[in-house]
Length: 321
Ligand code: NAP
Image (cartoon, rainbow, N blue to C red; front, side):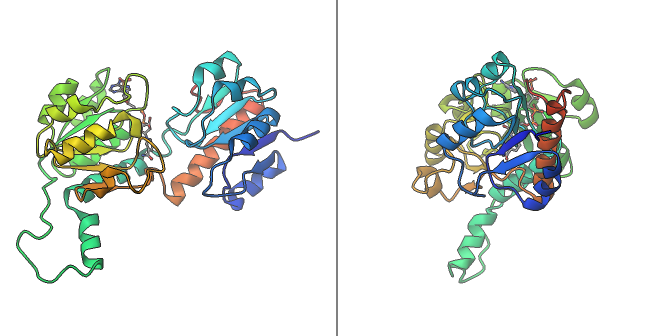
Protein backbone atom coordinates (compact mmCIF):
# COMPACT_ATOMS: atom_id res chain seq x y z
CA UNK A 1 0.00 0.00 0.00
CA UNK A 2 1.35 3.46 -0.83
CA UNK A 3 2.00 5.70 2.11
CA UNK A 4 0.14 9.05 2.33
CA UNK A 5 2.20 11.96 1.05
CA UNK A 6 2.94 14.74 3.54
CA UNK A 7 4.63 17.98 2.57
CA UNK A 8 6.35 20.04 5.29
CA UNK A 9 7.00 23.65 4.31
CA UNK A 10 10.22 24.03 6.32
CA UNK A 11 13.16 21.79 7.11
CA UNK A 12 12.54 20.27 10.55
CA UNK A 13 15.00 18.20 12.63
CA UNK A 14 15.37 14.77 11.01
CA UNK A 15 15.38 13.05 14.42
CA UNK A 16 11.76 14.13 14.95
CA UNK A 17 10.68 13.27 11.41
CA UNK A 18 12.57 10.01 10.97
CA UNK A 19 10.30 7.73 13.09
CA UNK A 20 7.26 9.04 11.20
CA UNK A 21 8.62 7.96 7.83
CA UNK A 22 7.61 4.36 8.50
CA UNK A 23 3.95 5.27 7.95
CA UNK A 24 4.16 8.50 5.99
CA UNK A 25 5.91 9.58 2.81
CA UNK A 26 7.33 12.89 4.04
CA UNK A 27 9.07 15.57 1.97
CA UNK A 28 10.39 18.73 3.56
CA UNK A 29 11.30 22.06 2.00
CA UNK A 30 15.11 22.16 2.00
CA UNK A 31 15.72 25.23 4.16
CA UNK A 32 15.31 25.87 7.88
CA UNK A 33 15.23 29.63 7.46
CA UNK A 34 14.00 30.44 3.97
CA UNK A 35 10.27 29.94 3.42
CA UNK A 36 9.04 27.73 0.61
CA UNK A 37 8.45 29.63 -2.64
CA UNK A 38 4.88 29.95 -3.90
CA UNK A 39 5.42 27.84 -7.01
CA UNK A 40 6.75 24.87 -5.03
CA UNK A 41 4.01 25.20 -2.43
CA UNK A 42 1.33 25.24 -5.14
CA UNK A 43 2.83 22.15 -6.78
CA UNK A 44 3.18 20.25 -3.50
CA UNK A 45 -0.24 21.18 -2.12
CA UNK A 46 -1.82 19.84 -5.32
CA UNK A 47 -0.15 16.49 -4.77
CA UNK A 48 -0.17 16.14 -0.96
CA UNK A 49 -2.58 14.28 1.34
CA UNK A 50 -1.47 16.55 4.19
CA UNK A 51 0.64 19.69 4.60
CA UNK A 52 2.42 20.92 7.70
CA UNK A 53 2.59 24.71 7.38
CA UNK A 54 4.29 27.61 9.15
CA UNK A 55 2.61 30.87 10.19
CA UNK A 56 4.63 32.58 7.46
CA UNK A 57 2.91 30.54 4.71
CA UNK A 58 -0.21 32.13 3.23
CA UNK A 59 -2.64 29.31 2.54
CA UNK A 60 -5.24 31.04 0.42
CA UNK A 61 -8.33 30.01 -1.54
CA UNK A 62 -6.65 29.37 -4.92
CA UNK A 63 -4.14 27.02 -3.23
CA UNK A 64 -6.85 25.13 -1.37
CA UNK A 65 -9.18 24.87 -4.34
CA UNK A 66 -6.55 23.11 -6.44
CA UNK A 67 -5.58 20.69 -3.62
CA UNK A 68 -7.15 17.57 -5.09
CA UNK A 69 -6.03 15.07 -2.43
CA UNK A 70 -5.47 17.32 0.58
CA UNK A 71 -7.23 16.29 3.80
CA UNK A 72 -5.52 18.53 6.35
CA UNK A 73 -3.46 21.69 6.77
CA UNK A 74 -1.65 21.29 10.11
CA UNK A 75 -0.38 24.74 11.11
CA UNK A 76 2.66 24.89 13.39
CA UNK A 77 1.16 27.69 15.52
CA UNK A 78 -1.85 28.34 17.72
CA UNK A 79 -2.80 31.32 15.51
CA UNK A 80 -4.23 30.51 12.09
CA UNK A 81 -4.73 33.93 10.51
CA UNK A 82 -2.47 32.81 7.62
CA UNK A 83 -5.08 30.29 6.42
CA UNK A 84 -8.34 30.97 4.58
CA UNK A 85 -10.62 29.00 6.90
CA UNK A 86 -13.77 29.59 4.85
CA UNK A 87 -12.12 28.23 1.73
CA UNK A 88 -10.82 25.19 3.66
CA UNK A 89 -14.29 24.53 5.05
CA UNK A 90 -15.88 24.89 1.63
CA UNK A 91 -13.62 22.24 0.11
CA UNK A 92 -13.75 19.97 3.18
CA UNK A 93 -10.12 20.31 4.28
CA UNK A 94 -9.39 20.16 8.02
CA UNK A 95 -7.24 22.94 9.49
CA UNK A 96 -5.52 22.26 12.81
CA UNK A 97 -3.37 24.37 15.12
CA UNK A 98 -1.14 23.76 18.18
CA UNK A 99 -2.90 25.11 21.27
CA UNK A 100 -1.95 24.31 24.89
CA UNK A 101 1.52 22.87 24.20
CA UNK A 102 2.92 26.39 23.74
CA UNK A 103 0.89 28.25 26.36
CA UNK A 104 3.39 28.35 29.23
CA UNK A 105 6.40 28.88 26.95
CA UNK A 106 4.74 31.86 25.24
CA UNK A 107 3.67 33.27 28.61
CA UNK A 108 7.31 33.03 29.81
CA UNK A 109 8.48 34.99 26.78
CA UNK A 110 5.70 37.57 27.08
CA UNK A 111 6.62 38.20 30.69
CA UNK A 112 10.33 38.25 29.85
CA UNK A 113 9.61 40.88 27.18
CA UNK A 114 7.60 42.92 29.67
CA UNK A 115 10.41 42.75 32.23
CA UNK A 116 13.10 43.48 29.65
CA UNK A 117 11.20 46.52 28.36
CA UNK A 118 10.43 47.86 31.83
CA UNK A 119 14.01 47.43 33.10
CA UNK A 120 15.75 48.31 29.82
CA UNK A 121 17.62 45.00 29.82
CA UNK A 122 18.48 44.92 26.11
CA UNK A 123 19.43 48.59 26.02
CA UNK A 124 21.69 48.10 29.07
CA UNK A 125 23.37 45.06 27.50
CA UNK A 126 24.09 47.03 24.31
CA UNK A 127 25.35 49.95 26.40
CA UNK A 128 28.04 47.80 28.04
CA UNK A 129 29.01 45.94 24.89
CA UNK A 130 29.48 49.25 23.04
CA UNK A 131 31.98 50.30 25.72
CA UNK A 132 29.76 53.14 26.95
CA UNK A 133 29.81 52.20 30.68
CA UNK A 134 32.32 54.64 32.17
CA UNK A 135 30.84 55.24 35.64
CA UNK A 136 28.13 53.99 37.94
CA UNK A 137 25.42 56.65 38.21
CA UNK A 138 22.26 56.78 40.33
CA UNK A 139 19.84 57.01 37.42
CA UNK A 140 21.90 55.12 34.86
CA UNK A 141 19.53 52.92 32.83
CA UNK A 142 16.80 53.55 35.41
CA UNK A 143 13.68 51.73 34.31
CA UNK A 144 10.25 51.44 35.81
CA UNK A 145 8.86 49.04 38.42
CA UNK A 146 6.88 45.97 37.48
CA UNK A 147 5.89 44.77 40.95
CA UNK A 148 2.68 46.18 42.45
CA UNK A 149 1.73 47.81 39.13
CA UNK A 150 -1.42 47.21 37.08
CA UNK A 151 -1.29 44.79 34.18
CA UNK A 152 -3.98 44.95 31.50
CA UNK A 153 -4.34 41.85 29.34
CA UNK A 154 -6.28 42.18 26.10
CA UNK A 155 -7.13 38.66 24.96
CA UNK A 156 -7.39 36.69 28.18
CA UNK A 157 -7.25 33.20 26.70
CA UNK A 158 -4.89 30.34 27.46
CA UNK A 159 -1.73 32.46 27.18
CA UNK A 160 -3.34 35.52 28.76
CA UNK A 161 -4.25 33.50 31.84
CA UNK A 162 -0.74 32.05 32.04
CA UNK A 163 0.67 35.60 31.93
CA UNK A 164 -1.80 36.66 34.64
CA UNK A 165 -0.53 33.83 36.89
CA UNK A 166 3.03 35.09 36.46
CA UNK A 167 1.93 38.66 37.24
CA UNK A 168 0.40 37.56 40.54
CA UNK A 169 3.89 36.44 41.63
CA UNK A 170 4.95 40.06 41.12
CA UNK A 171 2.04 41.32 43.25
CA UNK A 172 0.47 43.02 40.22
CA UNK A 173 -3.21 43.90 39.92
CA UNK A 174 -4.54 42.29 36.77
CA UNK A 175 -7.28 43.69 34.53
CA UNK A 176 -8.38 41.85 31.42
CA UNK A 177 -10.51 42.50 28.39
CA UNK A 178 -12.19 39.86 26.21
CA UNK A 179 -15.46 39.83 24.30
CA UNK A 180 -16.78 37.51 27.02
CA UNK A 181 -16.22 37.44 30.78
CA UNK A 182 -14.13 34.64 32.27
CA UNK A 183 -15.80 34.07 35.61
CA UNK A 184 -13.53 31.14 36.39
CA UNK A 185 -10.35 33.21 35.96
CA UNK A 186 -11.89 36.02 37.97
CA UNK A 187 -12.61 33.62 40.83
CA UNK A 188 -9.37 31.62 40.74
CA UNK A 189 -6.87 34.39 39.89
CA UNK A 190 -8.63 37.47 41.24
CA UNK A 191 -8.36 39.21 37.86
CA UNK A 192 -10.90 41.92 37.06
CA UNK A 193 -12.83 42.46 33.85
CA UNK A 194 -12.56 45.89 32.25
CA UNK A 195 -13.98 47.49 29.13
CA UNK A 196 -11.27 48.09 26.53
CA UNK A 197 -11.03 51.86 27.16
CA UNK A 198 -11.11 51.41 30.93
CA UNK A 199 -8.22 48.92 30.71
CA UNK A 200 -6.21 51.30 28.50
CA UNK A 201 -6.74 54.15 30.95
CA UNK A 202 -5.82 52.17 34.07
CA UNK A 203 -3.07 49.74 33.10
CA UNK A 204 0.64 50.44 33.56
CA UNK A 205 1.40 47.53 31.24
CA UNK A 206 -0.95 46.75 28.34
CA UNK A 207 -0.33 43.30 26.90
CA UNK A 208 -2.01 42.15 23.71
CA UNK A 209 -2.65 38.41 23.44
CA UNK A 210 -5.76 38.42 21.25
CA UNK A 211 -5.80 36.52 17.96
CA UNK A 212 -5.63 38.46 14.70
CA UNK A 213 -9.16 38.68 13.30
CA UNK A 214 -11.16 41.25 11.34
CA UNK A 215 -12.29 42.58 14.72
CA UNK A 216 -8.87 42.83 16.38
CA UNK A 217 -6.92 44.12 13.37
CA UNK A 218 -5.46 47.52 14.34
CA UNK A 219 -7.40 47.54 17.62
CA UNK A 220 -4.33 49.33 19.01
CA UNK A 221 -4.59 52.46 16.89
CA UNK A 222 -3.97 56.17 17.44
CA UNK A 223 -7.11 56.43 19.54
CA UNK A 224 -6.15 53.44 21.75
CA UNK A 225 -2.61 54.69 22.38
CA UNK A 226 -3.94 58.17 23.22
CA UNK A 227 -6.04 56.69 26.03
CA UNK A 228 -3.07 54.99 27.74
CA UNK A 229 -1.06 56.54 30.56
CA UNK A 230 1.99 58.50 29.40
CA UNK A 231 4.01 56.08 31.57
CA UNK A 232 2.39 52.99 29.99
CA UNK A 233 4.34 50.15 28.42
CA UNK A 234 2.72 48.35 25.48
CA UNK A 235 3.61 44.68 24.89
CA UNK A 236 2.50 42.84 21.76
CA UNK A 237 3.06 39.07 21.71
CA UNK A 238 0.02 38.20 19.59
CA UNK A 239 0.14 39.26 15.93
CA UNK A 240 1.72 42.40 14.49
CA UNK A 241 -1.39 43.60 12.67
CA UNK A 242 -3.27 43.93 15.96
CA UNK A 243 -1.36 47.20 16.36
CA UNK A 244 -0.96 50.06 13.90
CA UNK A 245 2.83 50.51 13.87
CA UNK A 246 2.68 54.06 12.50
CA UNK A 247 0.37 55.05 15.35
CA UNK A 248 2.59 53.21 17.85
CA UNK A 249 5.68 55.05 16.58
CA UNK A 250 3.91 58.42 16.87
CA UNK A 251 2.64 57.59 20.37
CA UNK A 252 6.19 56.73 21.48
CA UNK A 253 7.85 59.72 19.83
CA UNK A 254 5.20 62.14 21.14
CA UNK A 255 5.49 60.70 24.66
CA UNK A 256 1.88 59.50 24.74
CA UNK A 257 3.20 56.16 26.03
CA UNK A 258 6.61 55.34 27.49
CA UNK A 259 7.86 52.15 25.87
CA UNK A 260 6.97 49.07 23.86
CA UNK A 261 8.05 45.44 23.73
CA UNK A 262 7.27 43.72 20.45
CA UNK A 263 7.61 40.06 19.53
CA UNK A 264 5.48 40.48 16.40
CA UNK A 265 5.29 42.99 13.56
CA UNK A 266 2.94 44.02 10.79
CA UNK A 267 5.39 42.65 8.20
CA UNK A 268 7.73 39.86 9.24
CA UNK A 269 10.66 39.93 9.08
CA UNK A 270 10.56 43.65 9.85
CA UNK A 271 12.86 45.79 7.72
CA UNK A 272 15.89 46.89 9.74
CA UNK A 273 15.29 50.50 8.61
CA UNK A 274 11.79 50.55 10.15
CA UNK A 275 11.40 53.70 12.31
CA UNK A 276 10.30 51.69 15.37
CA UNK A 277 13.72 50.01 15.48
CA UNK A 278 15.42 53.37 15.87
CA UNK A 279 13.83 53.97 19.28
CA UNK A 280 15.73 52.99 22.45
CA UNK A 281 12.47 52.53 24.33
CA UNK A 282 11.39 49.74 21.95
CA UNK A 283 12.53 46.19 22.69
CA UNK A 284 12.15 43.84 19.73
CA UNK A 285 12.18 40.09 19.33
CA UNK A 286 11.87 38.09 16.10
CA UNK A 287 8.54 36.34 16.81
CA UNK A 288 9.99 33.81 19.25
CA UNK A 289 7.07 33.47 21.68
CA UNK A 290 6.93 29.68 21.56
CA UNK A 291 10.53 29.14 20.51
CA UNK A 292 12.06 26.70 22.95
CA UNK A 293 13.43 23.38 21.80
CA UNK A 294 11.03 21.45 24.04
CA UNK A 295 7.94 23.33 22.88
CA UNK A 296 8.82 23.37 19.19
CA UNK A 297 9.21 19.58 19.37
CA UNK A 298 5.80 19.26 21.04
CA UNK A 299 4.27 21.51 18.37
CA UNK A 300 5.68 19.38 15.56
CA UNK A 301 4.47 16.21 17.31
CA UNK A 302 0.98 17.66 17.70
CA UNK A 303 0.91 18.60 14.00
CA UNK A 304 1.76 15.01 13.07
CA UNK A 305 -0.77 13.61 15.53
CA UNK A 306 -3.41 15.76 13.82
CA UNK A 307 -2.20 14.64 10.39
CA UNK A 308 -2.23 10.94 11.27
CA UNK A 309 -5.65 11.11 12.87
CA UNK A 310 -7.21 12.83 9.87
CA UNK A 311 -5.49 10.53 7.37
CA UNK A 312 -6.84 7.58 9.37
CA UNK A 313 -10.37 8.94 9.07
CA UNK A 314 -10.63 10.34 12.62
CA UNK A 315 -11.12 13.88 13.89
CA UNK A 316 -7.98 15.98 14.47
CA UNK A 317 -6.95 16.40 18.12
CA UNK A 318 -6.89 20.20 17.80
CA UNK A 319 -9.03 21.16 14.79
CA UNK A 320 -9.82 24.76 13.92
CA UNK A 321 -12.22 23.73 11.12
P1 NAP B 1 -6.99 31.73 23.00
O1 NAP B 1 -6.97 30.80 24.15
O2 NAP B 1 -7.95 31.51 21.89
O3 NAP B 1 -7.16 33.22 23.58
C1 NAP B 1 -7.48 34.33 22.81
C2 NAP B 1 -8.36 35.24 23.64
O4 NAP B 1 -8.59 36.42 22.89
C3 NAP B 1 -9.71 34.62 23.98
O5 NAP B 1 -9.88 34.57 25.38
C4 NAP B 1 -10.73 35.56 23.33
O6 NAP B 1 -11.83 35.74 24.21
C5 NAP B 1 -9.93 36.83 23.14
N1 NAP B 1 -10.43 37.60 22.00
C6 NAP B 1 -10.78 37.17 20.77
N2 NAP B 1 -11.24 38.18 20.04
C7 NAP B 1 -11.19 39.28 20.83
C8 NAP B 1 -11.57 40.65 20.64
N3 NAP B 1 -12.13 41.07 19.49
N4 NAP B 1 -11.36 41.51 21.66
C9 NAP B 1 -10.85 41.08 22.84
N5 NAP B 1 -10.50 39.80 23.08
C10 NAP B 1 -10.67 38.92 22.08
O7 NAP B 1 -5.57 31.78 22.29
P2 NAP B 1 -4.11 31.62 22.96
O8 NAP B 1 -3.67 30.22 22.86
O9 NAP B 1 -4.11 32.31 24.29
O10 NAP B 1 -3.27 32.48 21.90
C11 NAP B 1 -3.56 33.85 21.71
C12 NAP B 1 -2.84 34.42 20.51
O11 NAP B 1 -1.46 34.56 20.82
C13 NAP B 1 -2.85 33.54 19.26
O12 NAP B 1 -4.01 33.74 18.49
C14 NAP B 1 -1.60 33.98 18.52
O13 NAP B 1 -1.92 34.99 17.59
C15 NAP B 1 -0.72 34.56 19.61
N6 NAP B 1 0.50 33.76 19.83
C16 NAP B 1 1.71 34.37 19.58
C17 NAP B 1 2.86 33.66 19.81
C18 NAP B 1 4.20 34.30 19.58
O14 NAP B 1 5.13 33.60 19.19
N7 NAP B 1 4.34 35.57 19.82
C19 NAP B 1 2.83 32.34 20.29
C20 NAP B 1 1.57 31.76 20.51
C21 NAP B 1 0.42 32.50 20.30
P3 NAP B 1 -13.30 36.08 23.64
O15 NAP B 1 -13.59 35.06 22.59
O16 NAP B 1 -14.18 36.01 24.84
O17 NAP B 1 -13.22 37.46 23.10
